[in-house]
Length: 187
Image 1 (cartoon, rainbow, N blue to C red):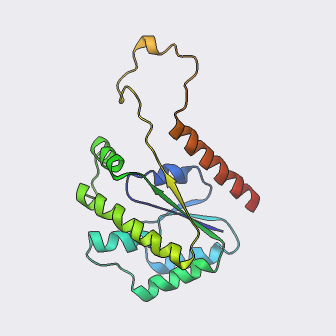
Image 2 (image 1 turned 120 degrees about the vertical axis):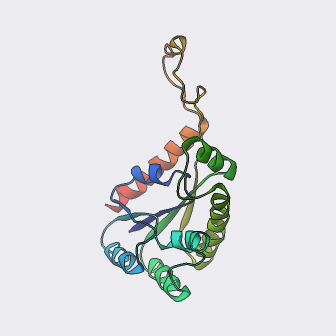
Image 3 (image 1 turned 135 degrees about the vertical axis):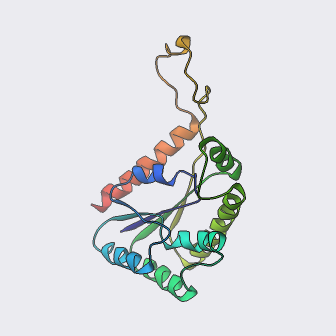
């Protein structure tokens, strides 16, 4: 089975991927023949890709004014994906949250305006993949904000007996538990 994790920078893909076994990290520069090998391998074992040719369909036109794949190569990879058990997890969040994360962490690969373009482009590509019959699950990462925004927690606040999870934390924990249960059935 092939699991693909896609989404814009700062959406939480790598964090999400860290919960899954066998994650393989590719870069934007990887060529389609590398993905073809992983598609073949996924016929007999679990393969998890943190990004793939789908990213190039989004980032290529924005970062380099063109996709490195032809439309025919992209269609071929999508058709191969449809021929094996697969799931695409589209990890995303609201643009204002992405921009907040951008400002908090800094980013050196994309600009703020590109991040907005990338987010919009992902929705178009995901919609196209859905029309093709690709199995897609959207994972919304809602930020749970530390009330102290990274500052040292005051001593009087350290006596809290048990931290209470926010709804967002509980939702993500539930999504991850469901994914782990699905993966356990595959073994």
